[in-house]
Image (cartoon, rainbow over all chains, first blue to last red):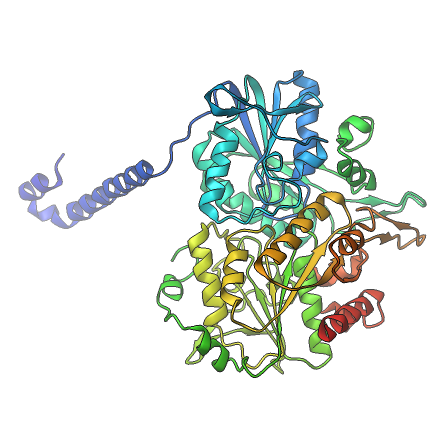
Length: 285
Length: 283
């Protein structure tokens, strides 16, 4: 129904119809605007052979995203089978995954100019750390980061994978935007510690995920309690678990795990042994 | 409004040049006084260190400015109990938020400009660059003895922009913060190279979260390992400023926005920061 023809026929209802017409026009306008904006945004293209992509993100730095990503990927690999799980380290500035997975070296290039991921502990791994020598900083503005993320996702011969776990850098910036805009993400984990400053930043991270329409799978509360090895006294060094529970509740998800603060995790990460392999019986799982 | 920040603040500004900055803020007559807090690694305690150093300088009678250029996770307002404060504009520029009535600690952060403190700031580089320029040039940093700049992790737009904008200003140097673990030290090693390449002097390295003393049995556990920061300082031939242990009282003070330095004068953490401040001022 064309709003203008109705106005001509029923002048007494003009006011109501004008309002209706403008509301409908606003709706149309909004839809047109969204369509125009969508045209200028990059399209989400899945990686051939990869069934699910899961982001491990936070908003806050140093909460244990890489630790959680590496151990989660290894645990999934044990469940799903050799080389069915991939681990992508999208932290261009501070790639920790090579250290944690005890991998180094440059990836081979095969046909189609694609890089071959390095393999350890049954996982296929790719990281900026393999492409940049040891102590060289990566001092890049956003555009180059976007390009690098493209390379690390699309120009890698991932092969058939059930799940690709993606470790992200801290913040809510270029890397996350690029990942959300160019890849169909199955979901994301939000990692946090109990401190309010961490929860605050993690909340922002979760809000950003909602804005770019990535489903949040759950919250991981890391470094939750420290048990003294000598006297077994528990200390909640960074705060109580309540904050993480509230964060999860606010986003309609659960706290998937409260990972304790165990010195062995740090030591093992430094020497490239994921704790789920070295201590499978420990509570961290 | 975009992201809860009034658009006119970002786009309605006049661009001032560096000489205006120097003379308006009385910085040209002072000796080098800008200190950057850098890391490369996230979550090592940059903001914590920036706040404690600022409070320590204030305690010894200096006038301090604290600029938070971490847009994604601005922690500084909370750590000083200044959440919810609004920024006002004066003829001389934006008025920073003062942490005390005597106006000896001036603070600026994007946290003060957000409508809702939980709002994320999802910006690409150019906007961040413009905001940093604004923070440095349009905020009325009046007659400071020291300006401490807290940065986010990484070596990206924010860091490049800060370096570009402070190039002609009196910079004292950078303090690098790390935790003892190898994964942290690896990133900080990169930051050392970044400082060398951009010509910024490294005042020293702080090893944070270095050991935890159990409150019940006093057993010290090196939760995040030990010694990595000191080893890096030796390797990179820069001063090692000190170790800061994990102190739940410090965490608690930061959570509630209370000054640890003023409330726990006898603590060895307070002593360590006094020591670090002394090393910085004498360098």
